[in-house]
Length: 197
Length: 197
Image (cartoon, rainbow over all chains, first blue to last red; front, side, top):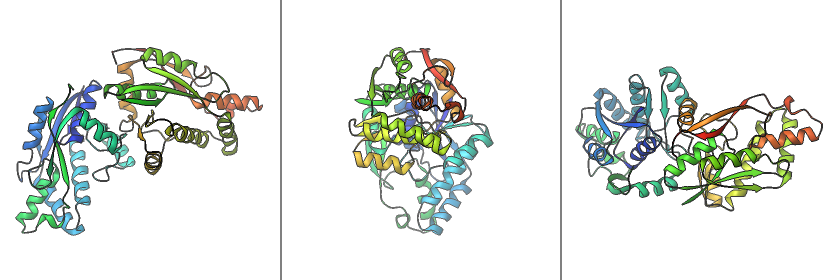
């Protein structure tokens, strides 16, 4: 059974896809892009390493433009990231019956509340699966290290395939320094497999 | 790595153990009993079918006596079931570093809130894993049917291995009809495997 997994190339969305595979699903990875910069390149590489089908879906640039507005308005990125994530899920739910992502128990943003999840599933008649929701950060660190060879990258130094990369680019285009809003943080991407998945 | 899974013999705790196995853990199933009646018998059978190690842990009968009090006081079983579940987790967390159970996304009771989970993990320095928390009831129905041969039993007709069986028995001992408080519901147990786990 096909399941469509929102995929950034990071350890969480990778692990999410691995769990679904192990449960008998056929994971199809989807990386969202808004036509600003080709920030999907790293996700493409990781999808190859995992051996899962992968496609890039390009959505309306207006979505990420609005997110950039929100970053400036709120002076921090969380509401903007949440907005993009929810908008993307709404759009994909019209297309796919089984949608999944790498949302973790300890994540704050992006994350749907329980009633938002219920609403999405009922309105769109889909199943929305978040395989990592029952796992804390310690457990996930253990699991990621069991399955993957990981590489840490400083955010903003390389193109990462999450929503942040394109928002940063738009802010720069507008003459705004993205460092002002995005706190420096480490991102971890999957560069190899330690065991068969 | 050993993980200890609270186990009733039902499809949820069984699926929880299966997911952990597939992620590379070694599941040890634990069925709790309070010395009232041997309600662990069905869980024992299912553990054999799954091929996982299983043990019965007998805890103080006072816990389930208090739960029976609560059922009568509140006139419905949810607070009592929640009380037993939390008490059991607190006790097991002193013994085991990795604890898991079959709590599902759509469950209301028993379920720990996010801050209760955080508190349990931090105070006891453990990892508490709820592998089904990211899955809705439709997805879980699909997965249980993929892995297991299931049998439906009407609650109260056979000894089920959840907390309800012993509470019911205590109520009867006290001359109270448990049907007054426990709404009739179907319970599903695992009686065979459809594929290798």
